Image (cartoon, rainbow, N blue to C red):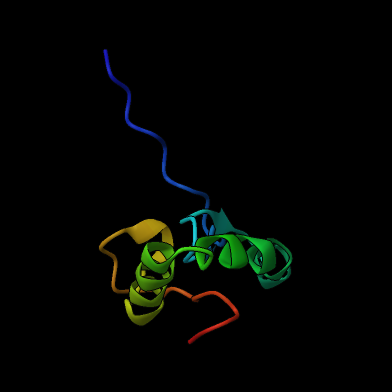
Length: 78
């Protein structure tokens, strides 16, 4: 039997690293993580292009289809 993952608790996973797709609970956690993660992603032409695309897209919390709570992107753009 395949169990579906349970949804995140309210107020969690509100910040997404556009480089790797990982979610964080606070802006501070994301900021600490994404400096090195974004640099690694941008190391190749393909990675840089993919990251630029992710930065342009709107992502909702946990990429769910809910329009109620807009997603807060990473701290660095373009």
